[in-house]
Structures are given as structure tokens and as C-alpha cells.
Length: 221
Ligand code: AP5
Image 1 (tube, rainbow, N blue to C red):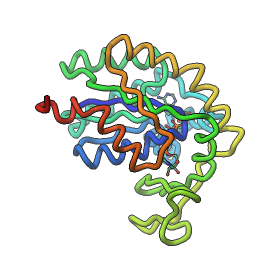
Image 2 (cartoon, rainbow, N blue to C red):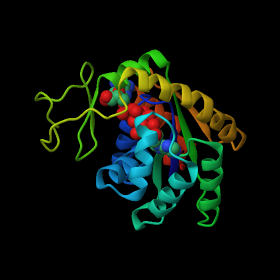
Image 3 (cartoon, helix red, strand yellow):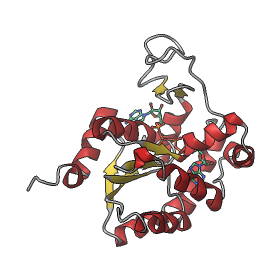
């Protein structure tokens, strides 16, 4: 099973991709997480990517595409994957299509989370992330059991460097300029499944599973 999750910053891509990954036993591949790992390790990709990420801009296509191609070649991706935050531009989508064409396993669905900028900003400004397991929490809607501590592994939760309101507004504007075009790209290929993501997490999960039901349970009429 091969999925892409599209949606603006704060739409809940990471949250729902994690749930889907646990449910289906296929890896969640988040380009944001992969890039942040490079930044943390101080690789040459990380050093270059950081300047874009801190400004809320996209990292150049060639760098991101190479990173994703390498990740998709790892053994755990052979049985399927959930791409979270990739592609974000038409050239990235074309590169993905080429990459999958040679593996004979095409994409099966593109879930497109719809959310207003107002809710997206509220979600991101209140978000805290575990630096180890990448689980996210929200100060209002899903706080950890113990203040600033990850429920799963006890690490101290952190804020990302691109989560202040001004940077979030910039990220949203860039999404509308550069990524919204992918809706038409995937609609033309009959892969697009729009999901209203302005609901509590459990309800969004139900909507997402319903939208891809034919892919995850193909034997059903
Ligand atoms: P990335 O890390 O991918 O950030 P993003 O796409 O901007 O998305 P976010 O991670 O901010 O939000 P999300 O939709 O995953 O929401 P989440 O589930 O966390 O990318 C960061 C940067 O890396 C980019 O700006 C760019 O520079 C670079 N980059 C990455 N990919 C790239 C690419 N392909 N090309 C070029 N550059 C690239 O949820 C948010 C919060 O809301 C959490 O606190 C969560 O608990 C809460 N929440 C989630 N769902 C709900 C709900 N239903 N109700 C209430 N709260 C909810």
C-alpha cells in the first residue's frame, strides 16, 4: 500500500500518518522529520536545509528528491509506505512518479487534508514534539500526562524552530502557492481523496480510513 498525505502545515499529517502506519504496519516517511534529523546531525544536507526551514521556505527539490529516493530504497519501504509532506511541488510529484514507475508499484491514494489557516495556526502554535519518538502533543487538545514530558519515552518535549506565528503564516502562504497545484495533479490521475481535517483526531482518523477503504480492504464490495 502506497499513500501520500497532502495538507497544509498543522493539518494533522504527521498525527494521522503515525496512526495509519501503526494500523497498516508500513513506515511513515516524513520529509520534515528526515530533514530535521540531517539538521541535528549536522550533515551537509542538514546545513543547507536549515536556512530554508528556519525561514519557513521549501528546501530545493533536487535535495529533497534525492533524500526520498534513498529512503524508499530501504527494505522496510518495499511492502508499502505513507509519505508525509512529500511531494510538495509538481517537480517532486513527477520525480516520485518516475521513481515508482521503475518499481512497478504505483501510488494507490493521495489523502488531502483540508483545514482553514486559522485552525492550522492554532494547532501549530500549541504543538510540542518529542525529540526522540517524534510524537506530537498540543497544549490545549492533547497535553502529555506529565508537564512537558513525552508519555511514550519520558523525553522532554520541545518546540520546533519554525513554529512562531509569523513563520507559520509564511509556511501556509507557500503551501497555497506551491503545493495546492498538486490537488489538480492527483485529481487528474484519479488518486485524490479529500478529507475534512477540522474535527477531533479520532474523527479525522475515521474519515481518512473511510476515504481509503477501497485500498486497505479491497475485497469489500
Ligand atoms: P514538516 O515537518 O513536514 O512541516 P509541515 O508540512 O509544515 O507540517 P507540520 O509538521 O507543521 O504539521 P502536520 O500537518 O504534520 O500536523 P501535526 O500532525 O504535527 O516540514 C517542515 C519544513 O521542512 C518545511 O517548512 C520545509 O522547509 C521542509 N520540507 C519538508 N518537506 C519538504 C518537501 N517535500 N520539500 C521541500 N521542503 C520540505 O499536528 C499539528 C498539531 O495539531 C499537533 O500538536 C497535533 O497534536 C495537533 N492535532 C493534529 N490533529 C488534530 C486534530 N484533529 N484536532 C486537534 N489537534 C490536532
